Length: 525
Image (cartoon, rainbow, N blue to C red; front, side, top):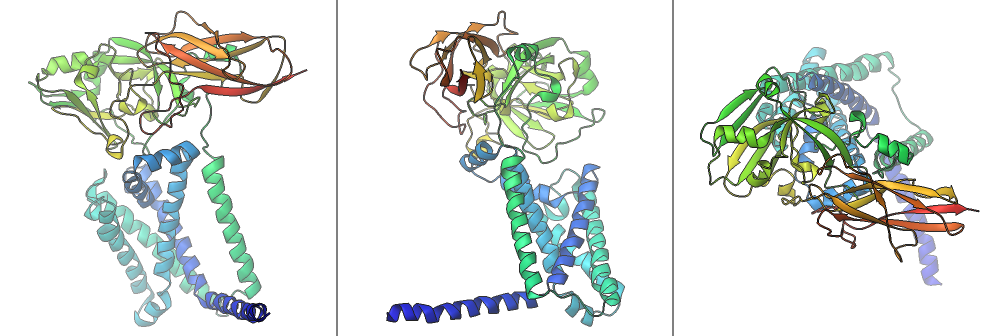
């Protein structure tokens, strides 16, 4: 009984403490903080605009690149698997929140500074110079972008310009809210306890909805899916606008082909520097090649096929005279991305420097003006916006490999059920099932389908001839359901040498996903 009474007396004290904390929160200068956040948003908006025109840097982008570059590969893989590109959106949202909170904090001492600094415009100058200096001399170096942004693509001058202009715009907004607007409302702005609680609840709910939306609704990973077998056949070559893209960047580089140069150097006899026109004049090869991202889940949609036109890497390397001791090719790109390819793979006749995709100039999002195509390896080896090809001795670890991803990169054999969709209701007597099978540059010799959860298997029909030995193979399977109810459909493939795909499930990190793809079909009647 004493314990119950003790707890009973303790509850009012807890409630009183909570009430006291709420009162303390109410006394905080929330109006100044909110004004700082709004002012900071204006400044960030300006830097984003300048960044898009190549006239400055966008701090949240640099922060996300810095964080992504240092997150261990297994953790990164988890976020990619569960959220897809939404992981990047969520990272950007966190970075934006941080860079909006900072100007809110800067605004808190505004009144004290106003009392000590004579002149309205002098105070504006302080709020212009100090945040800009913090960004240029503290934040950017901490994010590995160098003092004054010396390590950024636009350099110190444009970086300084963008940050000073953003700080000036933020200072102007702050001046408006805390001087002009406050002067017109001398009675001030205050929130009642009820208003404060309602506002806090709305803010909390908004944050929950935003995070949920960003992480689960916007970019959740999807299955490879065609509306029908007919559509699958029509899209054996993926339309350019539907070809999957994966990038480490928040904003991909816009490369000017006129000033762009491809440098071939390292362990070579005669280093070369080639222009875009030089390469266009020498285009002589086209290959139909399927690309698949190493992060693709079994059955996922991070896989597409295109016709790539360009030059054989073998011919480019032969022209500069590769040193016999060189055994790796290091590729460097306009966005700072790096990756290595064994010389034996780079000099394979199927490896290209591609300038065109599906009979059009290579789109920016797919690597314009030039990208590397190395059939048989996962997509991270097909470097986009390539600017330098360097011959080196010894294994080269690129951007993703330094984070633990495979540097072998051989694509695992897989069969994907791409039509009909999972949980589709079908009616007998015959249902056409279809999909794709892929084993990199090893080809596909056979696909089998099970309609009873793996107890028995039957051969699917392969489309012949395939686009090439480097592309996926389409397959179809006619099925007469034995009766109504739920049926689990599985598929498995064999590569060109007759080796079956791996049955045991494996996550994408670090060698690529493995296991049988499956869907459930619901048979009516």
